[in-house]
Length: 403
Image 1 (tube, rainbow, N blue to C red):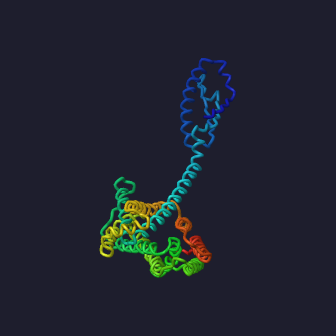
Image 2 (tube, one colour):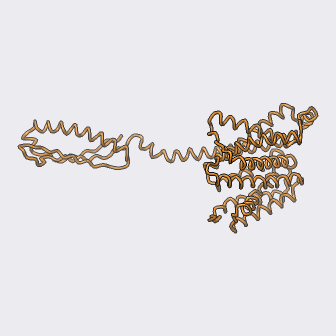
Image 3 (spheres, rainbow, N blue to C red):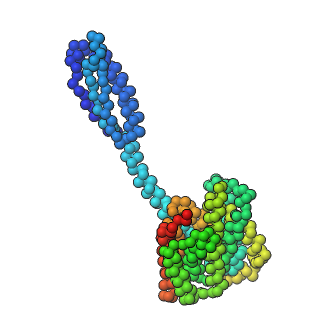
C-alpha cells in the first residue's frame, strides 16, 4: 500500500509557552489521528480511485480563550489498497475467461456434432433400422437427463397439467423430425443431408408467416434465394441422390421448424413455461417412450443373428455396434444440451451464425472421413446454400419488430 503524504502548517507559538499543555493536546490529537486513519481506510476501500483531503483543527482553550491557537492541516493522499490493481484488472480478466469458455463450448458443440454424424452414419449403414436406432438415442438422452436432475446439475422442472397438451405436441414433432433425419442419413451421404437441412431458414420464415403472422423483411426474403438455389443445384449434381433420403430431409426441416415455432409460442404464452433445457429434457423422455413403442410395432425385435451377421459384413462386430450406438446416443443428446447452454450466453443471431459454421464443419469433415465424391457443381451449390444461411443469420438483425 502506498504511503500517505502529510503536510503540517506552522504551529502556534503557544507550544513554546506551554509545552506540557501541548503534549496533552498532542495525545488527544494522536488518538484522533488513529480514529481518522481507520475512517480513511474504510473510505479508501469504498472508493479507491479518489483522493481525500482531511483538515483537522485543534482547539486550545488556553487562558479561557476559545479561539483556535493552532491548525493542523492534514492532506492525506488516499492510498490505493493492495488489491486495487487486481480489482481493476478483474474485469478484462473475467472477459478473457468468458471468451475462452465460450470458445471451448463452441469447439465441444462442433466436435460432438462431427462424432455424432460419423458414428450415426456407421451404425445406420451396419444396422439399417432408423426407428430402433433413434429410439435408442432418445433412451441414452433420457438416462443423461435423469442423471442431470439426480446430481442437481440443473433444477428439476415443475410441470402443470395444463402444459401437457403443448408439451406432447412438441414431443411428437421432435420425434418425427429426428426419425426423418435418421432415415435420410441412412439413405444418402451425410454431406447431402446437411446441405438439404440448410433449408431450415426457408421453413422458419414460411411457418412464422403462416402461423404467427410474422412477415419477413425484404432482406430476409432475398437471403432465402441463394439458400433455395444452392440446395437445388447441389441436389441435381449429388452422386448419392435418393428420393427417400431427399424427401425425408425436407420433411425433417418442416417438422423441426414447426417444433421451434410452436415451442416459441408455448414459451411466450405460458407465464410459468419451462426453460429451454428442461423443455428439451422433458421432450426427450416423452419421445423415447413414444418412439420405443412405434419401433417395436414397425421394426420389431431386430437384434437377430442374421442382422448381426449383416453388421459383421459391414465390418462391425456386435460389440462394436453397441459401442458406436452408445457413443452416438451420448453425442446426440450432449451436443443439443451444449447448444442450449451457448444460446443462454450469446444472442440468437450469434447462435445462428455459429450453427451455420457448424454445418460447414460437419459437411467438410464427413466428406473427408467417408471420402464422399463431390463434383464441382455440387460443391458450388453447397457453398451458395451455406452462404445464404450465413447471410440470413446476419440480416435477421434488420428484421422489423412486430408491434
